[in-house]
Length: 357
Length: 273
Image (cartoon, rainbow over all chains, first blue to last red; front, side, top):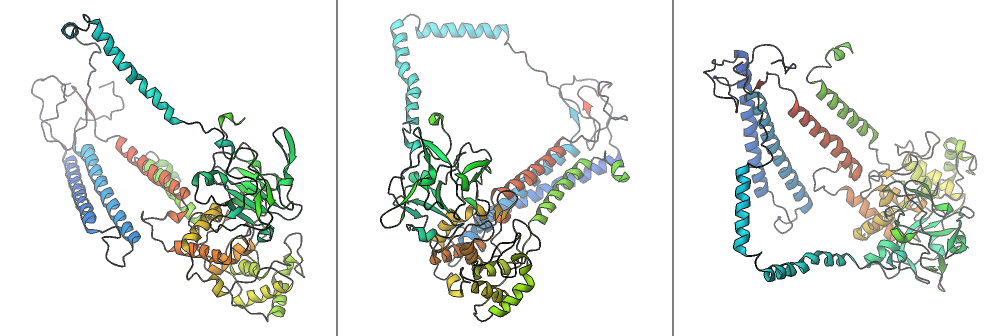
């Protein structure tokens, strides 16, 4: 008793169990135990608990029946619905009915079980000793004997030709998984460094697929997402080639110089009329599309991790985890006056990778 | 308070504290996300410039200057255009309650004809986009699918995939579009109010603007196959519900499962003692 000081004082009794008193599992069969009797108040408590448990189980039964009824009764899918019915609304009703009936059934079953355990069963602590780790000596000797007999019967020690050719036969199969690793490739080669943008390729609006003139995007504060013309259905290309065009008031845009191929160039020459600039729409952190542009502050915000770029200074990072500015796309005008790329991006777009440097 | 202290060891105190915390967070969150009444767009007219000027002097000039030339606290409105005036005033953003980086939507105190009178005056100062008429914002025959593509590419980054709004930098927010009228959506694209960029007719054509409006207004009446929209803000409310609602419920269940039983424990083999 004294080793369990947290136990409240008072007579031992177990709620809601009929006499005789419960017998623990590994207690040695002792002499006849004194008959057990619960206090009347506790018996009343157990009776209540029993009723609650039964009510919960009946609720679980009804909810389970409701689940089956909902599955059978509620039609989903345009083919089986009556004419004019909304498939989304039908799916909504079915989802809510199935989900709530199943939730009620499982919750009532679980709650009932817990109340059963906590209020009806006696509160017995059971100790179970662990087995010894080693097997009994007799078992080990028997195993060794069987193993040696099997080896002798198979003749694997007597016939080295069979043994060695068998090992030879399994060697290629063991190596096969290593060979299959090749399918992780091929390496992307230069794909990570280039997009489909090239000199003279027109920028067209996303969705509308219209090329743009300077007059189309003349209002300061304008922003538009553009893609390379002809690549609207090439998702691999679009994944890297998305570009945002941003129009500034004269004098607001001051992009810095950049080192391209060992030569310092003024990327101001990559803008049009010193007021229209193009940046990659792919965040340099983990590649989310960045298009939250505030024309008042010139911030471009990435919604994923709050990297913030200043569009007026070459999309330099002013906040957040992005390690480098958004790459700037050199712009030019073609002979028809449409906005085109002057070249591909001069640096890889999107997140960093090992060999990027 | 003393009664609370006296009962802090009560078996239900842990549940009560946890439930109280969850309720407080839930109520606080709800208080931060309110709805706003819709404002109606004014009808077009061209003969109210003089009336608009006197209204401007009375209600706008203290910040924007007597000739709408702008002051140190408010921008010039010359060339802002009628569409900008109608957007700002019909959504209740102007006149501003206080000076700040952005103004929230609120019920307007002005009638559509008063707003249009001021718009007419600002328009007379020179240039700027006009208020779109009913046929320009009508969505009949609009291509909602193209509208979805345009919305996803150009609007969803800030306003969310279903127009529920979202956060910008340094405490600014992109407002919910649920209360916006088609005219207000059109005007916002045309004029780029506050931090919003301009989507002029050169980059998004009038027909494409209709498509976007059709997508935004159609989305409002879409059913939610999952049962609950959770404000359609996506990950924020879903995460909030999962962490506070789901995890909170699991914690309560775990507390209940592991709570100490009231009746004494019988230790195996001790009955005979």
